[in-house]
Image (tube, rainbow, N blue to C red; front, side, top):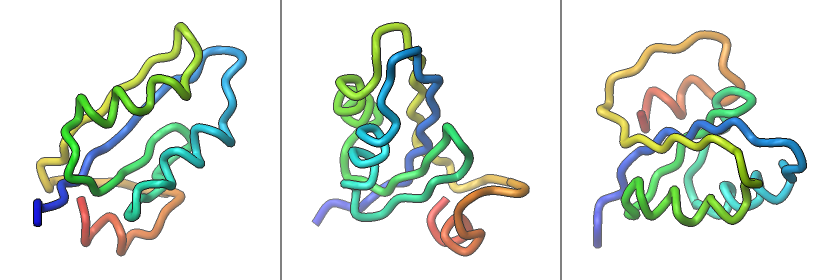
Length: 90
């Protein structure tokens, strides 16, 4: 079984986007955390490029998207998700 890696996803959705559809797509990953309004983390065996490519259909033209594999070093303050999730997975 391939090891899951942590990825941070950040986006700026262009006008006309559907946040409910985007959130539902991200939540299809078994392990996810909603970090800030436009930042999520997921655990996946996919590459950053594969995650990006699967997200693009949920973002209208002109949206910005950034997917990066975590290096297991992070700091944060006042996030939406559980601090414990981040400590364990990022």
